[in-house]
Image (cartoon, rainbow, N blue to C red; front, side, top):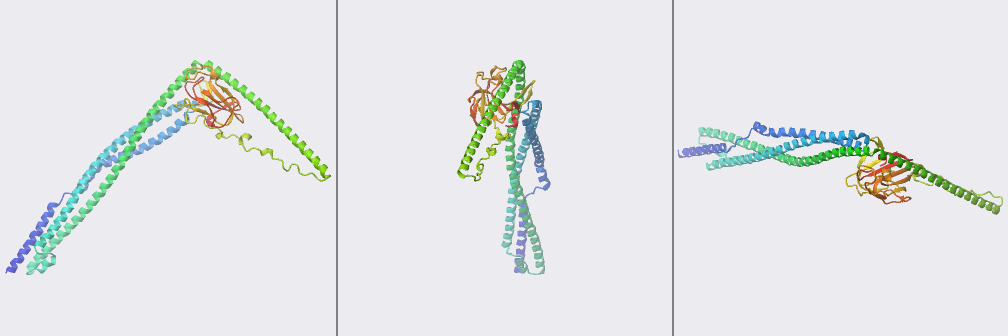
Length: 485
């Protein structure tokens, strides 16, 4: 009888332990956010991503448009006949840059919003992950407590419970109890496994959000830098547009006021150049005749020397056949390997005359009823820059008489409007002219090599500001220097 009572107590203690364990597990469970709530929470981030992606595509299109307009501006800036087209392209570029700036500002705002949303989402995820970890730890603790309660009750295993049954009824009751405990254990373990999976999934999402956050922060800084760059470009375009318009109007007014004098100076200068060209041709013709005369005299001298040697050999050898006296003569027809000697024209024979300054403010073409025969090279800070020989040649004319070295709205009458200048004869009919120098440091008749310094940039003669007027002439006719340099 005592044994039966003791067994019933053990069963009752075991039952209480199981119920207590189930109660503790139920009390430790934390509510889990549903998929619907999570989806609603991330909707703002998804919307921002779409807007940012759309802005990125638009910025790419605007960048391509800017590149195309830059090419158009560069291709028309040197052509005086395309000034209107150049200004139109600049205006369109201004509008494109403005649109790019506005798009960047919208994109920057969206990025900042997404960064804030991601930071908030990361903070919430970290709390959720912490709670999930606590939930798992509590579940493990509950499971340990249930096992401990079973141990305290005197049953370390399900087998012990069955073996300790006193009768069939007791066994059935314990079997049912074991079954319920087993079901509870399975549910409990499955729940812990599920919690572990959710924990790992949330951790992966957290890391992805952190990576995206860093990427967005980098993109934000890049867009802010690009925004600053675009604003500077817009300022430059405004300045460039207004500067060109103002300069054109000022130069046109100055030309109209001095048109008669300027045309006369240009006609006189052209007449002088043509006269110089004819004189040079006469000099070259005379030099060529003298060269041919010397060659002919040298040829006759050699022939006479060969005849004398042959006669002497005949006298020494009687009637023996003369040797081939021409066997050791050189082939004078191939004495030179310089393409320039065969009138071969190579565009690369000329180099840029003002190294470091490459902007052409005016090109070749008609301007206000007059024909501009060269290119005007101007860039900020060009005053005092070195003027270099575009190719090897001989200085055939130098003018250093102009003292009016400053920007002016009319001609001072010096150097036919070119102020201080020099002309180099490169041979094969090519001349180059360098005008408006502060002074020329070469002298007439001096031989120069490609790149040798001729003088420095100034604003002498008819010049509204510091620049170099550069011409290329072939047989006295002005060419477009842009085809050569």
